[in-house]
Image (tube, rainbow, N blue to C red; front, side, top):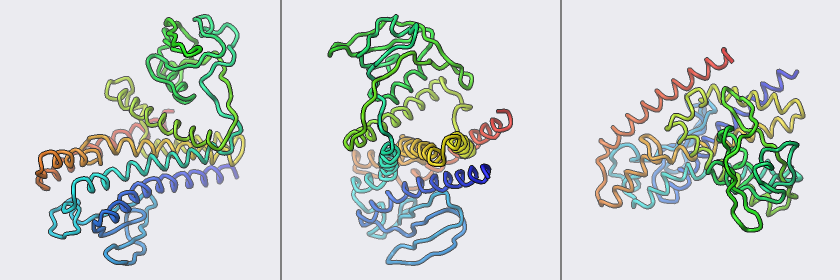
Length: 354
């Protein structure tokens, strides 16, 4: 029975993942319609067409694979003389259409975050309430009532920032900054205990933080700060990948994502079905914020890459020929497919090797 429930939760997770991509394309669609750009087709799902109907200028379709969708705009990837084509609209309108998908993903993360916070009675803060026995942080000079504001230079605005900062910190010499009665205090670097997780040393907190009671405005504020925290985590992780701090074995592709959803579901089921769904929602929130942020990076084939071409057009008053821009995005797409293939290979290896 439990295997069936886990399988059901995995299916729910995959459908939610598809919804994240669909919501991304919905952003492009709504802004394109608002900009009076012709949308030739708006599809829910990918692959073979199951059902479709025409309404006005747009074909609305349902496709076999529930893994997202697409918004096909006239003149987006080819030259078109249609006055409603993508390229015929002012640059600022096209910029809004291009960035809409990523922005919608981040907004979706904010909304889902709020839904996961509503059932919680209390929230964690970054204010120290007490120390564990033989606390290294206390020995370093921290006091009850101090508010942690930075860990190894990583700014802390929420308890999630604090957890991420601890995960990045060097256990041999942790630098922590606190605020005490409005004064900034930089504690001298000190060693902290740690656990080894997936081959990496992760600092173990030796202190407790003050709780905060739930309120409506508290949920809204925390949803915003947590979404910002996740955005910062994505950017910091990308920086770590570029610098070599994180390896490919620490990145998950589609196979790894499904496995992570399975693990999250199984862990949640040890408490309740609701907890399992909550864990999956947390995974989906991370995925949608990741998709939104990564999609806006200035790389070929991504919205951020298209944005660069549009900015250049706005500055120079001359668009880059569609043919050459297409070559750049095609090359970027091939590189992204290659990277995805490598990441998927690592995902599969991890499944069999643990």
